[in-house]
Amino acid sequence: MAPFIPLKARIQLGLFSFLTGRAIGNDDTINRRLLSRFEPLVPADPKPKSGVCSADAIIDATRDLFVRIFAPSDLSNEEKAEKLPLVVYFHGGGFAFASPHLVSYDDWCRRMCSGMRVVIVSVNYRRSPEHRCPAPYDDGIDTLRFLESGNLESVDILSDLNVDLETCFLAGDTAGGNIVHHVARRWAASVDSWEKINIKGAISITPMFGGEERTDGDIQNQNLPVLTMQRLDWYWKVILPEGADRNHEFAHPFGTTSKLEERFPPVLVFAAGYDILRDWQLKYYEWLNEMQHNVRLVKFPDSFHAFYLYTKCEEWKKLVEDMKTFIDEHKNE
Image (cartoon, rainbow, N blue to C red; front, top):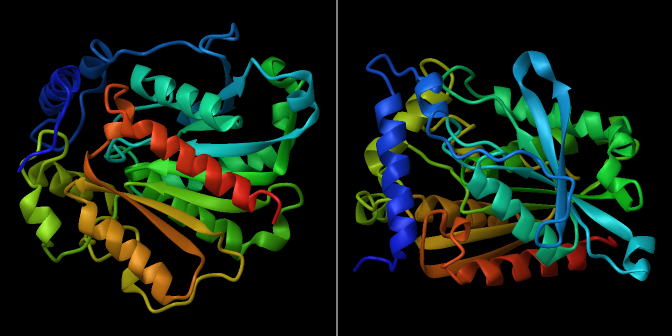
């Protein structure tokens, strides 16, 4: 049985698979110049669009580390007087593709911003194969340091908003969900060095974890049009440190017996039934649960990998509602 994938989504997925496949060379490099000719990128827009405005801020131009900031533009005076939670978001794309200014992620962040009534900071982290892990984790921490230093105060679209750095959440999908875990652990391990940023929760949307074992989900969903086993194996090959296998802690965090840091935040995990990563998402939840950590699992049994990027897939609305509920539950802790 295959998942229902709307026609427009099938076309977009087919184009993504074709273009990225053509851009990957026999030497495992990516022809970024070729890819840039076809990637649908959109600029930030300080003017309201669907109740949200956006702006870019550069953190380190030498490594193209920047953030796209999304803020609700239709808040009432009462809402403007309240403190707004901050969500630091890490996009998906197998660590190798996509960015905050890709049209699908710009749109997704707008929908989350509008639906959750939060400020979103979407991170353009370094990608593989040019930059293997832990480079994206380093960029995540550096983004938090950038925010800690008060750099949001100079962003015009936030001038009349009360952004609360002490009510910060990490969120990300697929590869970004993996980054959320590792950045949260780094923050929790150095919590005494942070004066403003306080991470209240981690939201992991169909996160990208793995291992050397082939699970039922790997086998059952290996040929779906969204993420195949062949592509997933290639991702791990160019993501992990040279010589590492998929049982490395970057891919397989639940393979370690070490305890989580005391300040590691509560976690919300989303899993999709028709996702090659499904069983690894469940293993992540089970591992956190066995560690007696505060974790919640939400399943979308009939959905496919990255379904929320497509507005025809109505389940994205429930996903946003669940994220908002999680944020509301933990923002005052």
